[in-house]
Length: 566
Image 1 (spheres, rainbow, N blue to C red):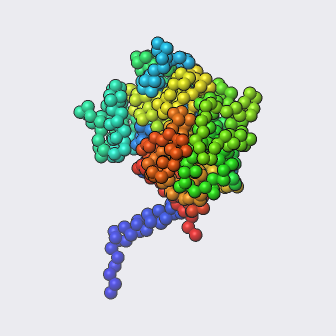
Image 2: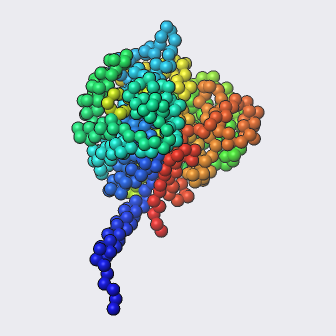
Image 3: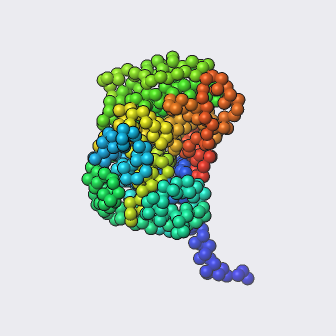
């Protein structure tokens, strides 16, 4: 006689089958989606948002808020961001969440005794610009997402409250910046172990103040940040510490949604961020120049490949230094991205010898046609056809090093992205001109380059990077390796990186390029600086190798793609 099934065991099996079926349904719903971020916890938060019925825009907001917790030395609600997106309908849009200078800012605010003081623009109260990322994420979620912004904030808050295990990369950043962090008690309290030492890898980092800040915003909306408690706390701290930012600066802050930059490269359409991003402009400009050299026929492991791209970079960065700034304050020529101007620049390149770029060029229409008035990148897509590329930042590691007391929010040091004095290099060695001079309410120039690539009307790649001005070169190289040489995204991100920003006059190159390449470039007349890894790129897409999601192989991160089953 057969044994009667034990009822508790039967119920357990039923529960397991229900859970398994639910998981299968959830995974089917994710098919065709892809996510890439620099942190596994942030990627998991984005995946969970999709599982909860959200779309790519929800996933990106979930990732962004989580990165502010687990990767806060790079980005967070104390900083800014650029968003480039493509909706399932085919509509392209951007959100400009770049920070703005306080109303009491002025052109010479970092000049002392006639000399530019970069320390003032990089650390402390005067270095801080009005943050914009929170408003940008809220806008993205409310207008284009399916899950409430409140829900995303609550989820990120729980991660901050419960804590996470500090990875070695995080601990190393704390250690290398600890001398400056110690100058600010609220920052030191969070990132030290209670013995006056930097937190160690493997320890649990709990951020109760940041968790409470997220909860308060969830409860009261972004007004709590821009028109309430947070702005008042910031003004209070500023007055005690020689700062000029006031609550009124927060009240006046607004995001913008300029038309994206679009250019063609062979059969592809490249969609990027317009000024005050220099990334969209100069990725397009460099591609336009390189179109005249049939890059798809040039071996990517040849000296010629490195040389031609370097020469194009030099020309573009010379233009960046002169022309680029906030289009609400400066006249930025649309001709910078014209095919005609690129052709004239391409003629200046000697295929066999390093050229001297003494100054900027003059694009057509430079007096009449203008653009309308340490960082992390993450990309998301869903199976509906929504794609998004977001680059977010508080500038250098831990930004200004300031946490507003009782809030847990690390504040940016984006004032250093202005030209604090024409010709004075910023933290990344970039120089600028009057177009990027400090002015009240102005947004500083950025190299952030969130980019989406279309083939026909179909999105095939979302890419961007972190690493100051190398963001532009990283994004560019990923595009060339995938679009010209048909490499997979993973293969493209593993290729050696190199960068030239006009001044200083040198190629910064990874040692993996090899001695043959380095020696050949020297023989062509290039000055070489062999550096460490060249930034961090994240990308998702299908460039003919199947759906991919790839985080930079040089760093810890997590990327996940859910290919459509055939």
